[in-house]
Length: 425
Image (cartoon, rainbow, N blue to C red; front, side, top):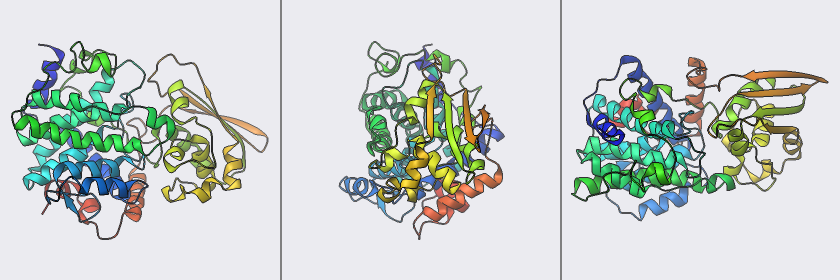
């Protein structure tokens, strides 16, 4: 059997999640829904909602954080944007894929359209979708050029939705690949198009399942074919992922993000949080080229919020000033603040020459304060499986997300996320 065949067999098989994996799925679902509610008022959200409303007025599926309902593709579109727009959503770090985001947005819309689903069936579908999205990143050995959270995410999400919908998986896979889109240009420019790419992938995942269920056919070798995923979008070997299918559940490898900023900033920010208010004179981060390229961009007083979330000098200045990263501080007034600009000017990133284009570690922080320099090795990013958030830290994140969410949201979203997700009544 080909690696693609193995993937499809895994996506369609009966599964019972191990208890620990099931607990991870519930926890990560709650985290993802919470950041989606926090993102309701983020820049660009109004335009995304306007475009989604133009897709139709059938009240099929809920929007995270508000009472409005839209057709399932439109709801997936809005919810995908809300989940990713603050850069606070969970990520599979080795894969470099925000694997929960597209899958949760698309699967939630499909569940609502059906009028609800059995929670255990939903958790299995969620885990499969996240597994596939993460697995495509694990199989890749090329640097990012396409935006992998969207290109891998649409494939994992389409299989999760098709499983719930009873659509032919092989055609949902091919249609999802044929819909894959999104590049790193939006990341380079710090554009709000970045979360749009996640939104677009979630919408496309629902549409791929709908078309497959309606009998629309698709390419049957979309991953390993001569013009398939691993020829055009990423280079790699799919069997590197599929050989462990069902033995390692990738959802258990997902990292949660303590701060609403690019994940590549979190190793440094986690170390700097303890130094807030201590009169730091100089910060130098030695890091792999991927980290340098993702968040080593220069501070600009006229930057956009999307750019600022990926600008470590500004983020470090905020952390040293406030002791946290508050998305409400991403404003033109704060970008032009001379005190924050001066502090940002003390931050430098140095690429360490790591030959692995997907490497996030090792990282080393050198901090000078009071004329003394200390070196801080960061072996794991806060929120990763090797350095998980404590129960208090997880609760603090949920409390902060609730503070940012609009009033009037369904209280189950925070108190009982699995029931919220599976029961739209």
